[in-house]
Image (cartoon, rainbow, N blue to C red; front, top):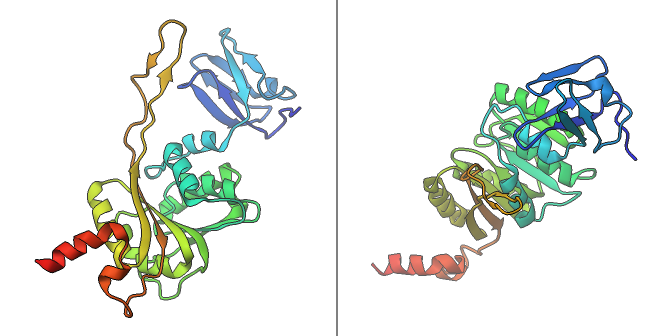
Length: 283
């Protein structure tokens, strides 16, 4: 049985739209529209218990998951949502002990989530160029308890002469022009290592896919993930009119070796692009 104590993280949960993530301090109180929640009242209770406010409303004391941390992050930039993060982790096969490269730290949502998966033996190396965003991300990563498994560095990978890491298992790119760093990413990935790029627009997907082929990546896949929540209630279950629709497009690929220089172009391009090339060459 896990008991709540001083400095324990707690999610005060009232409903889906009203929940507060705090670190317990016996001297603090949370003032909300449903009443005052005294931190001291939570100390000694088991996670899952509930407290009653001075307005006779109750909140549950929930042990936060990484999902809760990500959804409560300070947003300096648009975050990568859990619905997209889950697919990234599953499709790329991200697991404990892996070395992860991230270009474009942003608010640190993807950084924190991935670090929670690869720890304790794995590590995330993340790079950005904006000091303000990096400070916000540092706070968010620390709040999520992942600082030990993340190395942040200010570095413009596009112009870096020496690559900071090598033999990465997975590369995550969150830039407006992800195709510009593919040559550098390729140098830092292990053979058949995966790359995932976050692309807000389809125009970015087009440019990125062309660049992936040019830089000898295969198994290219572009997807969009939309969650439709259901309000399940006895006798009147229906889909919710609120929810997260489009957030971004995801582009996945794997590093390969096409054997260029020793074989014809039609022999070495991924199967899905060969017909397009043949059509172009015949005109």
